[in-house]
Image: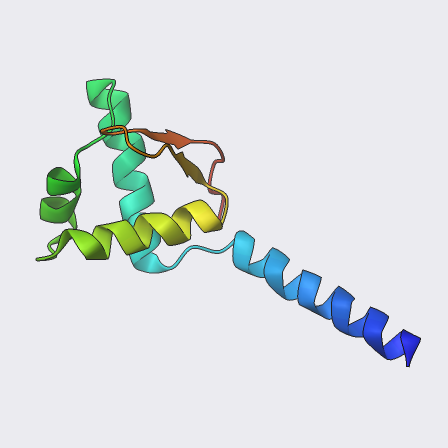
Length: 93
């Protein structure tokens, strides 16, 4: 029984680790936009600019995508501040 629990915990950890290193195609597109925009303008894009770039109609889509990118460990968002996004990890294919 203990061996089975340890196996499940290790397997779950492995699954979580794999999720942390993978971005979907759309998430990668947004992540690359954040990097290029901040490099060019020395500030992060607004939600409106991200929305236009990603060709979506709702800012909630951008909010959700940023949440997943943050959960996967590539960016850090700071609450209650405009454009407060920091890239904390490079994405390597």
